[in-house]
Length: 434
Image 1 (cartoon, rainbow, N blue to C red):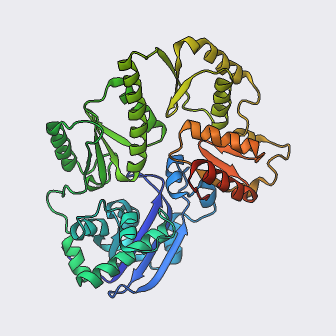
Image 2 (spheres, rainbow, N blue to C red; image 1 turned 30 degrees about the vertical axis):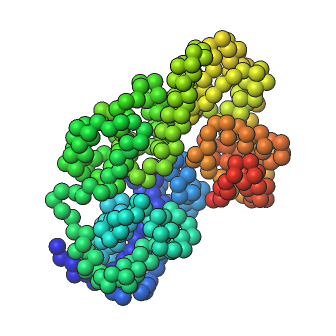
Image 3 (cartoon, one colour; image 1 turned 135 degrees about the vertical axis):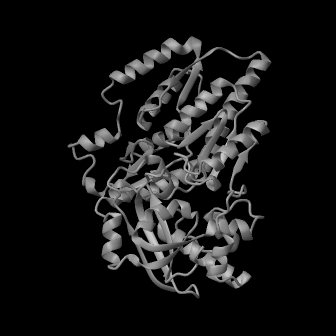
């Protein structure tokens, strides 16, 4: 491998997702000299020319509204860097370079790759994982905005300087350490065996097949996936899990009862798995005690938060016992007719979609005055339905004008302080708005 290059560039992209067809929504790069001193930096929001999925917005907090007046990636790179990198041999550095490089390499001449994710695994195998946030926390780097391009790229610059200082490695030596081998290393694959027992033969077969198929439709790199083993799960909770993953927009690949997901979704999958497993375990315990009663289940997947709130408030008013697993509502079968009636009545109620995006978009009453200022929003990627309902009721009690689009709460800038207080006091978290 030729390690000679003219320019050294650390890059980071935020995108519309993880597939090979992903598009950039933000770019940042730092050009360095060979002493790792910054000699140029550029960053910009990027218009992907397609909608940004809600589940991805929940990660990087970049919305369609934020990028609508931004340049496309071609426009930005050509405008900001007139000769581009096309006449140069460029060393491109990124954390998990297989994710970022496909968006950038067409603007370069010869490309020399350096992946700091691979470098971290080589030099610091003892870390619990090698995500950029973990590395920043471990070594005390200031990480202002995780999952934003400039801040993430700056962490990579800090990491390169740390390696040079503590290990005395040159950039060429770092590149040599991360040369690709004929067989991909295994230490990037996470096997989730905490939920169920392992079926080792199936697992080894799955990993072998993933290594043979580096061009998987779902995974950009075998090194950057998590594998979950659901061999011992029953069909019913597995079906609920599949439904939840689909609703959350998480890209998945199944081989038998083994699930593979990109590591960017790992925290979300862990939360969904824990919720489904806890609910199912409680159900089985009740059956063992002889206290189980037959239940009926409703799927409320496409409902607005305000609609779910109306439903839950009605259920509480009628003293109907119920529980939620994701967007699946479970009630006792003796209450089925009453619940059917409640849902039917709500569907005929003209206020059923109160505070919905459609109401906001079509309102001409002045309730949502100066619509162009409604750009502050909160995302809640790990909230359960009961938490959403409690929050909606609190907002109504405080008379805060708002609307929901999917599971994203939109408010005016003047109400940010009140909403942050509600979230912190009632749910014990601070969710910063975009």
